[in-house]
Structure formats: C-alpha cells, structure tokens
Length: 500
Image 1 (cartoon, rainbow, N blue to C red):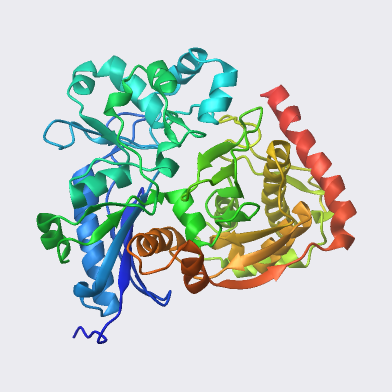
Image 2 (cartoon, helix red, strand yellow; image 1 turned 90 degrees about the vertical axis):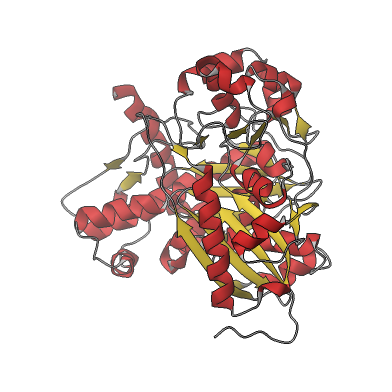
C-alpha cells in the first residue's frame, strides 16, 4: 500500500543509458528514496553498426518512473521537477511531425570510422583544438551525420532536428526541441568556448547548423510535462523539466564535483580521470576530452582508459571460468605480494587504449614472468597495470593544466581497499571514496531540484545529497618502487607496437 507524508518535495532523475533507463526519486533532504530500471536492446543490423529504437527508450522510462515512485512510497503529486541525463554522442533525427525518421545511431557505432580523418582534414588542427577541443571519433554525432549525409541524403533532407538521446526524451516529455552544453559539446559540432553550435564544424561534417537545437544551461527549465506524457508516466501535468546533462557531467554533479580544481577517478568497466576547470584545458595532442560541465563557466577535462575493472574481470574469469571466484579472494591474495609484483608488469590494453595512445589496436601483455611468479603475483600486476594507466592519464592532464593533489574515486573497482591504495601510490595523490549509488541519475535529479527551486542552488544540493567514505593517502615508502615499475610499464607499449 502506498503511503505519503503530509508534504514532501521530490524530484526525479531519469538516465537513458545504453542498456537501460533508470529513474531515481530524490527528496528535499537529499535522500535517495527509490529507483526504477527497465532495459532495452542494442540493435546491430550490420557488423560495426549500433542502433536503438527511441520508442523503446520512452517505454522503459515510463516503467522506470512508475517503479521508482512505487518503491519510494511517495505519491506522484509531490514531484516538483524532472531532470534528464543519458548516453553521450548519439543522434536521433526527427522530421516535421517530431517523430524519429530512423533508429537512433548511438555512441558504439563504427560505420563512420573511415570518414573521421577526411572530416578533420577540412578544419585546421588549430581550429579543432580551439573550437571542438576534441578529436573526432566514430560514434560522435558529427561523424554520424556525415555518414547520413552520404548514405541517406533523403533522410537528412527531411530532418527538422537532430537530438541526442536525453534531448529526445525532453521532446517526448515537453514537446520542446532543446539541448544543453554538456551533451552538445560531445558531438564535435559545438564551440566549447562559446557554448554554442559551430558553423565551421557543422560545415565540415556536411550538415547545416539549422537542424541543431537551441541550447540552454543544464539547470534551466526548458518546458513542462505535457498531459499525454504525464498520463503515460503516472504523473501530474505541468511539472517543470530542466535541460539536464550528459551522463558524464551528471555523474560529476552526483559525486559533488562541481568547483574548479576538483578531480574524480571513476573505476568501472573502463575508467576516467576528470578535472574541473573555469576555462577549457586542451591537451595539445588531443589525447584528452574537454567538454562543457553542467553549470555555466565550468568545463571538465577527461582522460579515459578502456580497461579498468574489465581487466580484473578477464583475469578472474581466466582463473575461474564460471566466474564464481570472489574478487575479495583475489585481492586478499594479491595484498600479500609486495609492491611491484616482484618484477612482473601487466599492460592492460585488452581492448585497445585511449589516453594517452589513442590506439584501438593496442594489446595487453604480462612481462617479466618467471617460475617464482604465482597467480597472486599476476593479480597484483593487473591491479598495478590499471593504476599505471591512470598515471598516464594524470601526466597527460598535467600537460593541459593544473591537477589536484587529492581526487574523489568511485565506481565498482573503488570498493577494493587494496586497489585504491595501489592507485594512490602509483599516482602520488590522496583518494576519497564517494559512497552510494546511481550517481548519474542522482545528478539529473539534483539539477531538477535546482531548476524547480527544491534546492536553493547546486551547492546546497551537493551538501545534502552527496556522501563520502574512507580514503587513502599515498605510501611514500613505495614511491621508488612504483617509479621504477612505471618506467618499465611505459617502455612496453612502444616495444610491443614495434613487433605487431
């Protein structure tokens, strides 16, 4: 039976992810009260293609909202605002009736891979760094639109607007065509300094900026919930909907990382190291991503590794094919091995690497194996190899601007005390954990709270909703060992590339 207090203001944060839609219920005291989640498939009509049905997103959102409210035990009448976040880079083309003209092409798609070099050649390297702040990658909306301009020109001719996934949901909720800087800056069609669309970049991709939506800041109210959408979601009409943020920017908000100089490490399947700044910090070699943050006058610069927790999962499953071996058992055995794994080094590039090599063909390796080494040594080497990959991110970030001496850390891998300590030692920085879960959807709900005046400002939302756990300081006695191991680690990549 659903019960409600006499009065409590809540906001909803909706996350349109790659595998599922989630909704969280956040109350005015910063408490996460309920979570709902519904999945949908990734469609692969051809090798290298990745698409999704936007109607499947909407159906999943409707189910997630109803389930989250049911779990929270709070009547829908108390919802004061809705915020959206979602997967970055993808695109939905809508026509004159505001219905999708084709399935959405999402970030995983690789059909535009052979176009990226030609597109970037149409713009000088200096302009790319100055305007986009990022190199163009397959799956970015700019590259996808360039492919559509060539392969499906009739579809592009019928297009009224191109929307990213969460912005398509805003259209469904409000009837408004709109975007915001954090998602727009990840399209390679956006001037990250001016926080507006770039005619130069759009022209290089063969599209008109007229199909790109107006841009509002993330906490701005951009529309109100339409009656037909309200009925499907089980909500009242007229609820304010804010512009929201891209999933990475929303995650930063949900982790309380908003002020310049703050940094966060995310250790999930892959990994990210992100620093907030009051101006764009661009790596001269474009080995980093620089995007707009979810508040005016803020940007974030991010180094990304492709192999974080997935490297440990691969090693665990190699030892134990049914996947039943607990990670805690693995790491407990690795804790008995000294720093440096007695000369064993692991290069974690099992699925290529981004920062700093930007090499999808990079491969992994164990180096220095001897009869002395046991599976526990190899586990320790895997943990250290991922830590060294983060160290490469840190040093690349240093080339772009100042870096903090303390980082927050979150993601599934951060639950390991040993792994956190190894990362702190390899980086030479202190770490503090971000507790809780659903930080991405939480960030969207916090932005909704700011826009709907449930929270006075983002500082208050962070103070109420974000909680921190234990931390680690670097062990200075391990500094020399890790410096020597880092040098060996960095020598492996060029050596292996030379023989491939």
